Amino acid sequence: GGAPREQMKGILANALRMFTQSEDKSKAGLEEQTKATNQGQKEVARLQQENEALQKEKDASTLKTQELEKALEASKAETAANKAEIAANKAEIAANKVTHAQEMDTQRLASSDPVAALATLQRALARRAL
Image 1 (cartoon, one colour):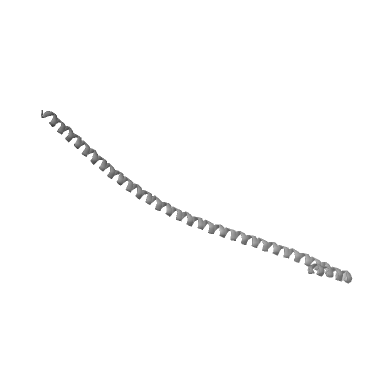
Image 2 (cartoon, rainbow, N blue to C red):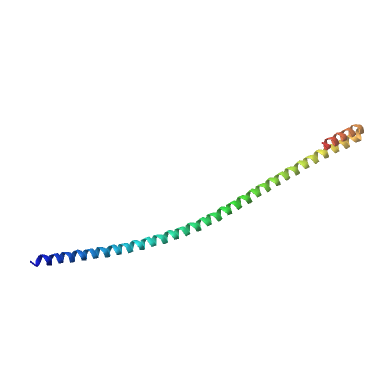
């Protein structure tokens, strides 16, 4: 009756071998998984660095845009000031022309009617005082 015992030994040896192989496989699988996880973590770190660099670039770009906008506003303000100055100069020229015309009228009047010329001059001075 030694056969069943030998058979049992064979089955146990076989089972042990299969168990050992599956252990080795799962160890190898675990190592692969660990490698993949480490690789993934490295990749995540690299992407985070890239993202930070891009964010810095974006911040610098935003800053540059803000500077350009400020410069543009300043330029617009300067242009507006220049236009106002030109308008004031034109108004002054127009006023000078009116004054000159009044002076010519006054001179013409003075040669023909000194009293009326004086009244005109007084009115002109009164207007200027306002």
